[in-house]
Amino acid sequence: MLVAGKRIIVTGGLTGVGRASAVKLAREGAKVVTISRQAPDCEAARKVGETSGVVAHIRCDVSNQAEVNRAFDEAVEMLGGLDGMVGAAGIGKDKPTEELTADDFLEMYSINVLGTHFTDLAAFRHMKGQRSGSIVNFSSVSGLLGRPNQAHYCASRGAVLAYTRAVAREWGPFGIRVNSIAPAAKSEAYYEWEKVLPEDERRRELARRKEQFPLRGDMGTPDDSANVALWLVSDLSSYVTGQVVPVDGGLVMTR
Image (cartoon, rainbow, N blue to C red; front, side, top):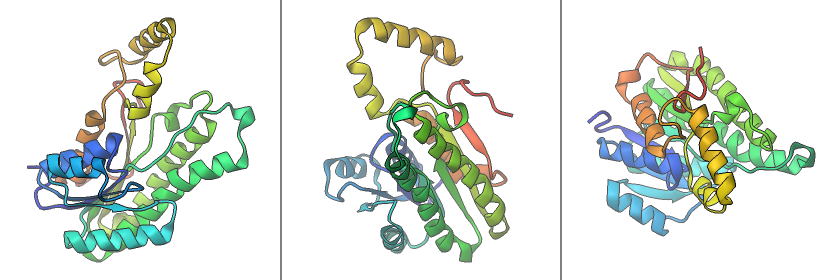
């Protein structure tokens, strides 16, 4: 088991890449606490716990620093320490750029950017004394490529990448690694969107993806990203920090 005995918090841990990461880490021997805006007794939390052995779920709004600090203190007490944090909490919405308001940007940034800062900082404070730890921030290929009708989302995801590089330099001397995953993965929202597409549009979308993605001719799954999160939390990546890892089937090939 790659992370046997490691104590890990996963934010956004009940859906998408967060849920896949929490399950993967727990099955690889880690003690995992998930955090999200959903209640601890919700069906999603119960299913994750039953199927993977995740220790507990804590309700928390990552855009609220006081809530984040409380949730992390509670989780660390349950776990008996903190070795890793996977930050997968985030939102995404489509809207034409000419219609975007200040409130649209503030909503996106409060969760995707401030939420990343608050959770990373809470993790750092618990890891600093032991001078070791791994933080993984989920971003998106949209933060690298840009997407029409997603200017505010792309900007927030690009900010996460820049933030990750900055804190990796600052916290490296404490033995704490900070990396980011930029996935192109199908989420629950994506499947719902795909269901309502007219058949002709659906065929065009499938053809477009086949051309864009060298591997599989399609977007990836949450498990693809969870595998990379597992590696970044594990000791196999002990000399890797400040990196952006696209998990996108070759859509973006960075240098």
